Figure 1: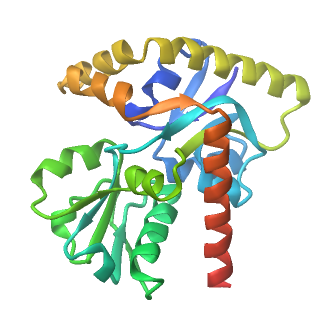
Figure 2: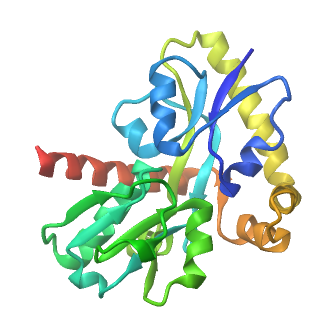
Length: 255
């Protein structure tokens, strides 16, 4: 039986909603999927690309992931002061990709001024309950908190595309180490089929997912239609390469 690590967010529904029912799913926030891969508890995971760039897993699988070109609406930086003046940042512990992106966007705005980081006590924490200059929140909680925030909000997908002209890729299916070649090929076929069918039906899947939780199905459908895309083509690969260089530079600056 194939076991996959998946995330509990709306943005993943088009990639997981049409998986073979025989597939076993382990649901975790993105930052915990790497440990599942390393332990061999899942065959593949929808892994934050930041972790893949740091050697987690054994390479990307297939043609699908979670990406945006422009505003993504679910990876947000809530500001208490202008971006150029940010010196402290509270980060969501759910995804290291978004933390790396937030640090990059702040560094570009401030000219690399020192930045104090603190991890929020839990994923999706209310930014109104922190004291830092900026607060990173991702996923469905980010979209819920935005209407309640009185200050400026930076959409990190929009900031990346404005600066680079490229899409940003947040997560991709990533293999565990030790998969035999035929297992890997079969898994790619399974994931690409689910992605192709699920993306074609993305709005209906998103609507049903939201309504089952008592949420706005129309808003969910608009989100997957307008703010997220899933097929990884040449421009997404270029965006990945650009972000990989950012991650390497961040690691070098800490060494």
